[in-house]
Every structure is written in C-alpha cells, then in structure tokens.
Length: 292
Figure 1 (cartoon, one colour):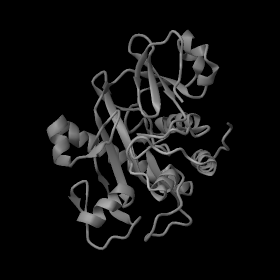
Figure 2 (cartoon, helix red, strand yellow):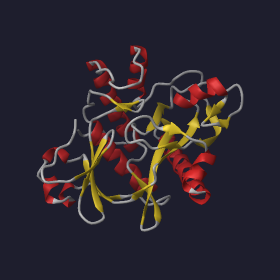
Figure 3 (cartoon, one colour):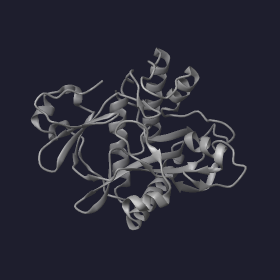
C-alpha cells in the first residue's frame, strides 16, 4: 500500500498520502488506497480510492479557488519530474503541488450533528467545547454551521480543541481567518452538493502559507475528509446512508475493535462496498461516471 519511486526522495508519509521532494518549491503528493479510521491506518486497501480522492480534490480545488488559493500545480503526470513518469501506477494518483508552510491544525466545519460531534453532544451537550441547544437529534441540521478545529497528528489520534485554544496556538488573527475561510468553503460546497443530491454534513480542511498567503492544501471535500449523505433519504434521528468511510467505521464499531492499532482486516464485502461508495460519490458530485 506504500508507493515506491526509485530515485525520488520521500518527504513525508502520512496516513493516506506519500509526499516526495520535486525540486525547488515543489512537492509530489501520491494518494494511496490506504484507509484510516479512528486515526488508525487499516491493513486493507480500498481499490480505486486514491484515484477518486485525486480527481475529486482537483474538482473541488477548481471550484473553490475564488474563496482561497490552493496548492495544486498539475494533475498531469507528464508535468512531474522524470522519476515519477517512469512509474505508470502513479498516473491518476500523483499531483504536483506548491511546497507550503503547513499549519498543523485540522479545520472542521459541521453543518449537522453527527459522528464524534454527536457522541460528545450526547455526553456533554457540547461539540468541541462549544455549547449547543438542548434537544438536538442525531444528524439534525444546525441553525448555522460551526467551526471545530483539531490538532493535526501524522500518527495517532487528532485532538479536538476549542476556538480559544486555537487562538493561543496560532494567534487570534490567523484563528479568525481560518474559521471564516473554513465556513465559507463549507457553505459554498454544501449548496453545490445539495444541488447534486448529496448533503455535505461536515468536512475538514488543512491550510498552509505560500508566498505569505493562506493556501488550501492536502485534499478538498473528498469522501475521506467529508461526510456525505443521500439528500433524498435524509431525515434526522439516526445515521443516514452515506457516501464516505462511515460504512467502514460502522463495521469496525460492530466488530468490537478498541480503536487502537492494529486494526482488523476488512472483509471482501466491506472493501467492495466502500470502493463503490467512493465511486458513486464522485459520480454524483461531478455528473460523470467513474472512469476507473
């Protein structure tokens, strides 16, 4: 599940992506078929997943660049250094990007109460330490989307932090900019997805700086970083059918796994079902049938 590029220098290997040096202020990012759940990389790859992530991120980078610039330079393998062009398996998975100074925070926007947010709300009446109205149901839409940042972990568990803690980490001015940009991206993407028959329940972004400007990096609005529901069958009070990795999370919860490494292998039906959901998400959002 790990990419191998003879002659290339590995810059960083994340939970899903492998990042290589590409000379100057450029990097090459390779999206693998690895899947992480509960911040643990699973031992079983998901066919086509890396290519779907690459195509959807490119799609969303193009649609959101008026809100905030992004790091993408090219998705064409012919634009990559020669050592990458010699590995045909990278086609559709590898992208050339600007090297940015990463902000080690995950910026999460939640328009609906679900997942870990719902778990916290049931216990404490809060999400990321922010008090919410009483009496909300699981998957209910919030009056306004909320911003819930988290620390960014290369390995291990990300940790939710309050907005006040974020201000202490990065300064109040940047914290405000991150919140405003995250929520604007969410609102625009939610409106677009709804028009395509999907509800964008929540999503997370990562940012960095390039030439002193805030820049969207990593990925954008993929089934890995987002929670997508079928709009036609949506109703609050439960967990709606999804087009993301919630299908895997549900299996893992049923399995009794303690959410600590090592994770259990996924059965064939869960692998196939997850791959199909990712492809369907691509088709619904782009209006194009998955070509893989």
